Length: 43
Image 1 (cartoon, rainbow, N blue to C red):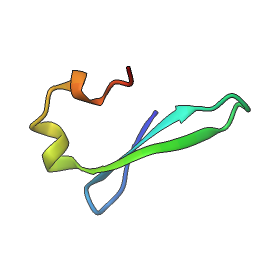
Image 2 (tube, rainbow, N blue to C red):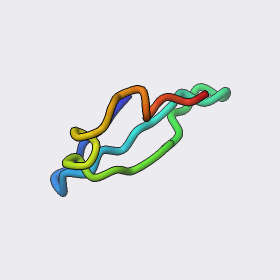
Image 3 (cartoon, rainbow, N blue to C red):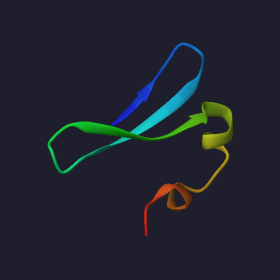
Image 4 (cartoon, one colour):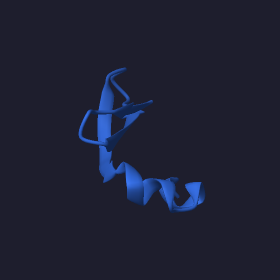
């Protein structure tokens, strides 16, 4: 799940083991759009 706020920050979430979403990272949208999606995947 990805949630974008009015400040143009992208907050990335993952579904945790307890069934609740946890914040993974907060990234400026402009920077995120200039990177390769593979750079944002967990190992």
